[in-house]
Amino acid sequence: MLSLAIAAFAPAGVALASTPTTSVGTTQTAPTTSTPTTPTGETTPTTPPAQTPPAKPKLRTRITALPGSTIVDGTAPLKVRLSGAPAPVSPVPMLSPGVAGKWTAVGRYYSFAPKSTLEPCSTYTLTVWAGTTATGELPLGGRRRTYTLHVACPGIQALQQGLARLNYLPYSIDNPHGANSGGSPERRALAARYAFRPPAARLVANVPDAPGLWYGALDPTTHGALMVFQLNHGLSVTGAPDRSTWASLLAAETLGHGDPAPYTWVTVSESIPETLQVHRGRHVVLSSATNTGVAGATTERGTFPIYSRFTSTTMSGTNPDGSKYSDPGVPWVNYFNGGDAVHGFPRGSYGSPQSNGCVELPIETAARVFPLLSIGDLVIVNG
Image (tube, rainbow, N blue to C red):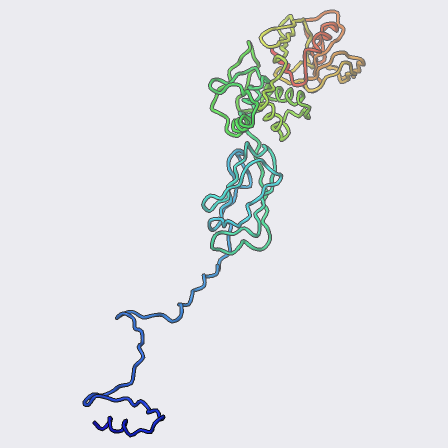
């Protein structure tokens, strides 16, 4: 009732202020601010955890294995082993002079596979770069490393098999290792493989009365065949299987370039009447009476390759009695053993020992023999 009375006596035009009221018996409290909470057992991180930097390599890359200084098989892969797997950014090694082939990383190795072969009887430089790096290690460091590699010459059995494939020997390789037809890089790789790893094959004579062969030895027959090969390919006629000879031999096998002429050799019989025969392939193409050396200047028996030839030359020396001789203009000369030669010489007869060690023929017969022969062809003197 009191509130109503006050309102009644307020002056006109004066606004009354609104005063909040409360009910009797209640208490008024200040408002509170709500704070978000997280579920029980969970915390909200305020900063990300610190990142641990990767450990820096402490060890340097090491070379743990290299090819031997002598490479016995030029077709086999070359391997350089590191202390760990090569890193993707690591430079591959290098061979000099260059060789067709490819470097690959396999396990802890750098491996080089030649497309066909390292050249026989050759020398290479292998370079491993200072930046070479194994995964997880520091680079090799320092200066680049260089190593000298010598590629061995293939063996004599391989040489004999190669010459037989090319018809420079009167022998064939028994099956299944026949002639190499050549004509493609794969065939060169095969010829190289035969050179460094010759098959376990036999050589079988393919002409009657073929000169004997010592398999695995540089015997006179092999020596002579090699001389013919070198002459035909414009090489120095040394009779030695050197680097240039092997390069030409592999090329000839790849291309299938065999000896275009039949295998040729000469036999001399010292049985009376003494005779000389020229064999070409399976045939005796010339037979003639001949003279060999007298007592004290006998013609040595054996097998000898022809090493020098002249259409005409001066021959000089010492007679068995100690006197000297000098014969100018001796025609159609084929030297085969020191000063001994097959040549023309005028005599009253032929078929008995009359010379100073040479094998003498009638001049007209010697003129027919000369174009049939070549450096490297064999002269075989028998009893």
